[in-house]
View 1: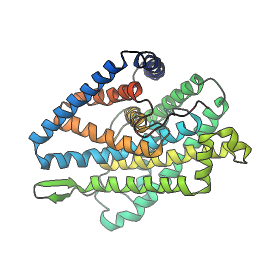
View 2: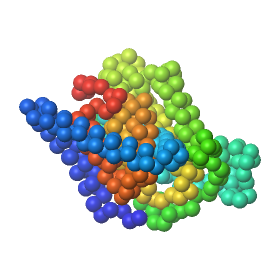
View 3: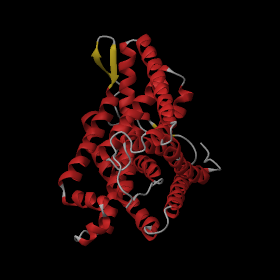
View 4: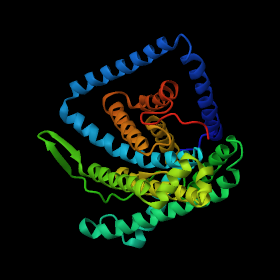
Length: 364
């Protein structure tokens, strides 16, 4: 898939659009027509929900369960990527558009590393796959974490106190750089990712099955998200991250190393993205240099939907976006799925800019 010629303009225009939407929301939604706009938005949501419910009823419970299995699996991948967006935004209020490409880099790096672990499709399976796959996850996650820390140190830290548009443009440049590196490395083609996960179906109830690989994807994602939640809530570094996100100046006065904390945030976000890249490859068995562009935008939408800067919100938003996309693909025309997802982004920015679980906070 070729890189859009207006790649940079897309992100800059999205930034301008977000600012415009915010101005319209404050000027129009706060006006006397607010009730009319809210009613129209509610009617649209109800109409879409009723149409979806009708299609689901006609399709039967078996097909619905299969669709939900696929939606939860891809939603888990969205959530892992969205967590990186929301962590970085929560601590330095930067939308790291290169994060989606770190996700793809994880898939590319793990694919190149597989022969070193003896992971050859058709020659290794079952219990013999556990240790090599675990080693692949660890090394790939560490690699992506180091890459993201270097990006933060070289591209973002010098611009930390610059006008907000400067680091945003830098993020776009880093995204294009990573995509260019992967393009030169592997070319523009879809690469075959080995299929190591079982193709068996797990019977939920008579006539309804869910793919075993979908359950594995969900299981790994849940473990990683729970580990992140425990780390943020209970570790010393996690508390430092929360303090820095709340008030970086006060945190620095209390002896917290701000630079170290921000670098750790980039590292952890990229660790999750690297894991997500491996999971993506194992689940879809295909990866391309520009997959991070699309997945990054969808994951960003999930982060905004759940509440940008809110970790549980990002996880919830990713899962919900995955389910919505699966229902759209399964019961409606898949060509409208992207339209639906980004319509959700616009609706959230207009009617609830804090997202599902977010809350209003004063400007830092």
